[in-house]
Image 1 (cartoon, one colour):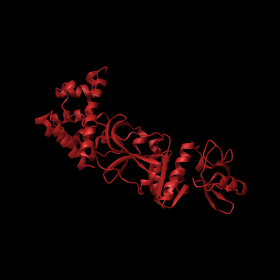
Image 2 (cartoon, rainbow, N blue to C red; image 1 turned 90 degrees about the vertical axis):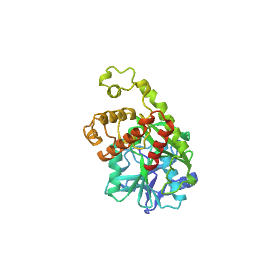
Image 3 (cartoon, rainbow, N blue to C red; image 1 turned 120 degrees about the horizontal axis):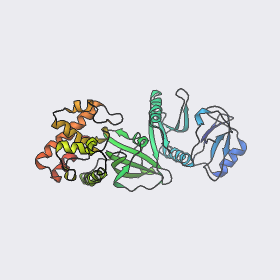
Image 4 (tube, rainbow, N blue to C red; image 1 turned 180 degrees about the vertical axis):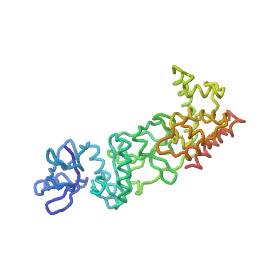
Length: 363
């Protein structure tokens, strides 16, 4: 059975089940009011149990399409906490706002122009895109928040992002970040300065912000300091031998991208040049492990192939939403860094300077 946090009364008054309503007030409401779905008009039941937070529910076998999915207690609780957050910041906020023209229901509508979606479960990437496009077609800007229910360690870390989580990465004023919310702790978590390694693996800075210190529009994460970027660099260097070890037992080395590129460049896999497998802000523009496509780019260059020809040949797979010009520009930046390192291949200090300069210019 589905759960709802907003209802209409017989006098057309809107009732929101937010944190400020006491149990006594809810019991009084249940005894003295009739409730109706704001979308389909059917009767609703007010449930005041001990497992889920108080919520409205359609009667059994309701055909209301806008509330067809059942919701977890975490989703319900998160929405009420976010409603409280926006209300305390003096923003106009509506719970479970339905847009009949696009047949979509936002978890929260803020200031009549932002649809806030609090995502607590996996969702197909295509559905994220279609809902985002639907809101924008209605003149509403969507803001996606992921649910997090455990305390994350702050600092620079390896993280894993699933495909649907990757689709929630935001781009604002040069900042790339993933924003999540922990209702129990009432804190926002930022995964920012994202460096794609390969597969589901990224390096990112994790930082939290208590709800009382958060602003809206949401605060943007700060750029990495040079000391923080050095941590990213050292983690990328740790990643290199891990990847090489993962390639040791492939069955056909001649058809393997890594081994074939090492052969064509006459490189020893155990002692790769320092400038292969480096963290760049645009690494997500290309699929595959960064060591693989950086080697492939070097092979193409050695053969006199331009990066435009290389990308158009489909030898390297582009990331989601990546355009050919963006991929070419990123590859050319990488090759320039590699060229500047050729005379000093093992100079870690120089490489760090070049990479941090690249990061600062592109964030």
